[in-house]
Every structure is written in structure tokens, then in C-alpha cells.
Image 1 (tube, rainbow, N blue to C red):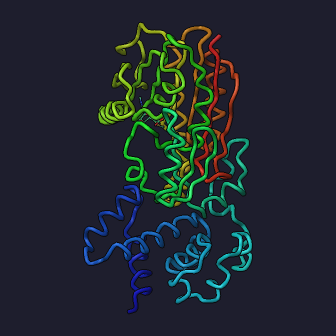
Image 2: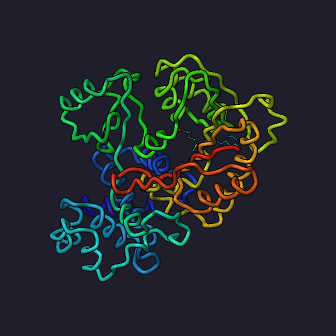
Image 3: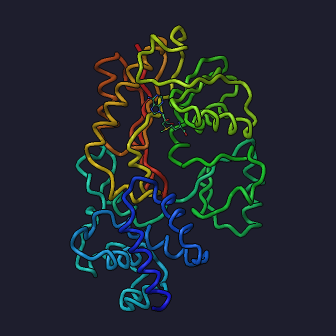
Length: 386
Ligand SMILES: C[S@@+](CC[C@H](N)C(=O)[O-])C[C@H]1O[C@@H](n2cnc3c(N)ncnc32)[C@H](O)[C@@H]1O
């Protein structure tokens, strides 16, 4: 067999063995560990074929063979000719620079919305066509520059010959494969943070001395954004996972943040039994656990393995957590409800639940469609407690 046939066979083997229970990049790592004779170029090309296959989502599912779908994924996702396609489908390789819609009609299939099978679940403001089309393009890596270091960072990126785009005072878009920590060695200069997450932070209008609670903080991406905007805030960060709060401590240390409190807490349990039951906050950030459907451009395998029933399960979890956290919000305070989901059930319906059940009132916000700038799509709404 020649090299390209080996690549195609390996990609097919991976796809057949992969059941979605691990993130795809973990599974690929394990696969290549078991096949140490594959060099770094082989690994890169095979991984790319597998990812491009999953970017097809449900397009031609059951209608074409796995190997054919791998090659079609490569055709739809690439803009420059490649050896594998030239070998198997030279006629397609010649058309590689066409826009996606033209490629699809050339293949006799014009319906790009087949990629994402849950369009009827979408939040208002998400363009199903543009969203579906975005899966063929790998999202960018975004950084948020800190401590007035944007100028110095841009010089370093130029020196490293990285193609970047400046999207605002603090936001820089980079090719996804950029090894940013090797280029900028001082971690206090920037945070890796998606452009849409940075936009959600526009709702953090904080005053010094206010009590803020980042209730599902994970490793603290939103908390650091908040403290960069207003270092005088009194912050409590919490999460259900001890390990992620350890990561938060490390990340805060690297970011030069020392004044904060943290607690490990399950917010599905009644707040009355929690260690902070007597506290009241001026503002609460609830960046809720969710389907992550707005970020599936980074994990396209989710298109194949996500089960629609999970949307309702996430909604129930979100309602439970939201109803609990608002108990600790002062009257006149605000809840900033955030998800990285594009599903109405996790977004507008949870907001409606809070309006009806907890007396909160929407002040601003809605979906943040990231697909036009190769970013994640999110939902962020600020609600006032009367
Ligand atoms: C979307 S992530 C938060 C991302 C984070 N705010 C950031 O900016 O990087 C949601 C977090 O909710 C946490 N979580 C899930 N279930 C929870 C629960 N029952 N109580 C508290 N936190 C929970 C998860 O561990 C996860 O870290």
C-alpha cells in the first residue's frame, strides 16, 4: 500500500473504534501511543482526516461509506489542494478552492444544515445556515491581552511570523495550532480566552468593594476577566470539582491575583446547607454547565455522539443551580447567566424560568454568535433581582 492508502485505512480504523466516550483528542493520543511506528507527520495527517470526517456531522450519514466520507470531509474542509485528495479524487482536488456551498452542489447535495441535526432546538439569533457552514472551518485560538502588554505581544507574534488578527483593544485571533506559551513566556501578559467569552465579560460592570460570586468558576477564566476590569472587587469563586479549583489557584498565581476566596461546592444541593449560606452578593456570575454546543467547532465529534435527550437534562441541572444561586443575590443585584450553548432550552427557557420563579428581570444580553469570526457561540444575559 502506498502512504495515502495507509493514512485513509488508519483514519477509518480510528473512526470505527471510537465510541465518543472520551474526547477525540484523548482517544487519538492513546491510539498513536499504541502505534509508535507512526511519525509526527503521519499522526498529523491522520488526525486531520479524522477531524475533517467528524466535521461532516450528519451529512451523508448512512448514505456513503466511512472512507468516502473521510475524503469528502477533506474536500469540504480544505481550501488548498492536498496529496491524499489528489491521489483518490483528482477531480475534486482541482475544485478545492470553491466555496463550501458550491462544493456541496458539485457533489449533488446542497443542504448544509444536515451537518447539525438539532436546528429546531436553536436559540433565536443563531443563523442555522451560517452556524452549520462554520463546522467546516476550524475555529481560531483567541487570547486576551493583559496589563497593557498588547503592543509587546504583537511584536513577539510578528517576530515568530505568526499570522494574527487584532479584534479589539484586548482580543487577538491566532491560527489554532499556535504554540502561544512558547512565544510569550510570561503568563501574566495574556489569557487564552475565546472572543465570545471576552464579549460576555462586557456585562461585568463592577465597582470596587462589591461582593461578586463566580459560582461555576472552573479554572477562573471569567473571574480573571472580572478582576482585570475591576481589581477592587471582593471575589468568591466556587465549583463542584476540587481539581479544577486547584487549577484556579495555579492560574490566579500565574496571573498575579492574590486576593480572593474560593470554595468547593455542589450547587444542586440547597444553599441553606452550604458553607456560604449567610452571605449575600451584589452580583453573581453563573457560567452554567451546559451541552457546549456553541463550542462544537472545536470538538466536532460531538455532532455525531450528542444525544438530543441530554439537552433537557442540562436544562434541569441549570434550573436547579440557578434557582439555588439566586437565593444568595441581594435585592437590586444582578445575575449574569452564561452558557456556551446554542440551544433555546438551555438559554431563553432558563431565563424565562428565572423570571417566572425567582422574580428576576432581564436587563440586557442574548446570544453571542461567534461563527462569523471563527469563535465559539455563547449566550449571556444580565438579570436584575427586584
Ligand atoms: C462552563 S464551565 C465554567 C467555565 C468558567 N466559568 C470559565 O470561564 O472558564 C461550568 C462549570 O460548572 C461546574 N459545575 C457543574 N456542576 C456543578 C454543580 N452541581 N455545582 C457547582 N458547579 C458545577 C463544572 O465543574 C464546570 O467547571
